[in-house]
Length: 199
Image (cartoon, rainbow, N blue to C red; front, side):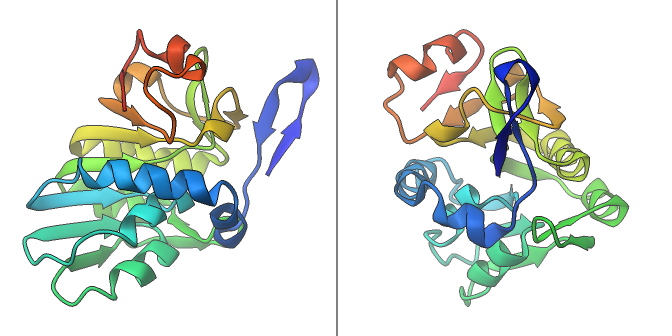
C-alpha cells in the first residue's frame, strides 16, 4: 500500500502477499518471462518473498540440478509442487504484515549459504534513494541475500518507479541488472540507465 507524505513523495507501507499479488499481475507475468532467460541452468538461487518474484517461481522448470531458497511462504508453497527441484525455506519469524519470514534467524540461516543469483523486488525504486523496502526487517534480509550472491537482479514493475519505502535496501548501482515489463529503452527507464543494465 502506498500513501502520499510530506513534500509529495509516496511512501510504501507493508501489505499482505495476496493483495500485492493482485496488483500489476500482467506486468509480473511479463517480468517472469524475462527472468526465465536469466536463471542459471544449474546451481543455487535465492528468491525474495515478493509477489513479483513469486510469478517467476510459478514458471521455473522442475530440474534436479537447481536449488532454490526463499523466505517467502507463498513462494515456497508454489515451489514445492516441483518433484525434482531442491526447495529450501529459510528460517525466520513470520511477519503477519507481509507474510514473509524475517528477523535474526533468517539472516543467520543465510550466513552459511552462497548463491549464484539473487532475484528480488523492492517496495520502491528512485534514482536518489535507490531501492527501498516497506520494512527494516525485509531490507535486512534482502541485503544479506545480496551479500551472499554472485549476481544480483532487481525486478520492479512500472508502478514502483519513483516510489520510496521506509527502509533503504541498496543503491541502484549495487545491482547487476534491473528487469521490468517495459522495453529497456522506454522513457521511464532513462534516468536509471547510467547506473545499471536494464532488461
